Length: 325
Figure 1: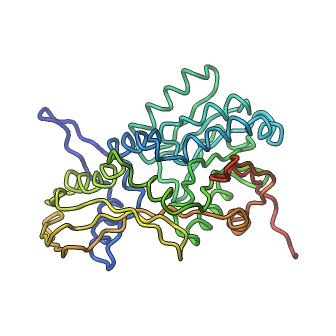
Figure 2 (figure 1 turned 90 degrees about the vertical axis):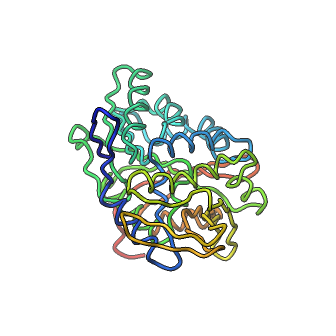
């Protein structure tokens, strides 16, 4: 995000892609805005608060899996790899992996620059002597990795079931892009949320304290702030819905009443009950996750889960493409 400091405060220059996605998102039907735009500074802070909620099982479950599995990950991956984390956020799970695999470098990639720099500084202090090379970027697009790790074997790290935020064909595209960035012979440690009871899923995305609702509504506040919009945020409510046909939780912002507003001077209107689709979180069965990885060019070589089977962590390898079955 680009910022220009002036005496009276900060003037924010909107990311051109953010502007484009928002305007298109309000023009299309049904309305939809890509979930990656949740993560301005406030959005990143709210997401970290979500991960600590009692209803939100994925973070604590995956953390427990990593604590148990990372020694085996280290044995399979070997020492000295460059750990490349896609969408690092606050990197709270990263130390578990770094302590086990003894990497040659750590490359966190995140779209939220302020958050990225703070978390990178914290990890650099916690692991003195480890080269920490942050990259501010949207990992859904091609990424140039730091030249310092060009010849270093790589271990991609993609925790949190972030892969579930994308529809399946986009997930496959991302996995293929990761393979291209990391190279043949690289490995990928990825978290995937499992299909489970509907009420448990809905509660995880619509918590009693309203933190997830604030996270969702913050997207509208960001649009108002960065694009000079006049969206009445009080006229929207957060909704989390389980779509069983597509095996995903959907997050929406629903208009409580008929409203009119402008974005950069362009007029828009929504009727009561209309929604803006803001996020998907796909859930995968055990076979589904492995099939998805293979479609993206990754061969699963090990998998770990919790006793309840709520979540899975899979280690995969970028092997050369086969000429024939």
